[in-house]
Image (tube, rainbow, N blue to C red):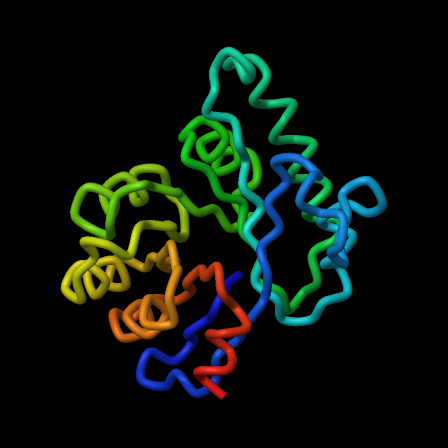
Length: 193
């Protein structure tokens, strides 16, 4: 689940959406979205102004050797570009640099975000800038306001994760996150209403 903070000074305009994790379908029986019935892009194509991250899970090089990355990226990029509403903020994300580099070179108009298990800091900012991506999804723990300000001065959007408590969302917004993930969207929405 995502909360969006377009205005760093105001948290009253909290936007709640949801994140779909397609690891398997065992936990998807009683939800509105099921990957067997509709693709993620089709599900979101008529949702106005929604923020969606399409995570490219290609880090396992045995399952995703270098020569498979172009085909993977082409299919994903075409599917997403064909469905994305004009006013939505959709981003293709990955821990793996390979698809980010490919998409930057071949689809410069697609928003890209580096995912890292590290906080917002000089190293993650440098990595995101070197890749030429527009943002990064980094961990809340260890992120400072100074690092967030530096990331924003570098032109990067920042998604902070994980959000396991309402106070995690509050902290992410106070740090200046553009987006933040939460595992408890109903509690977050209730707290901010």
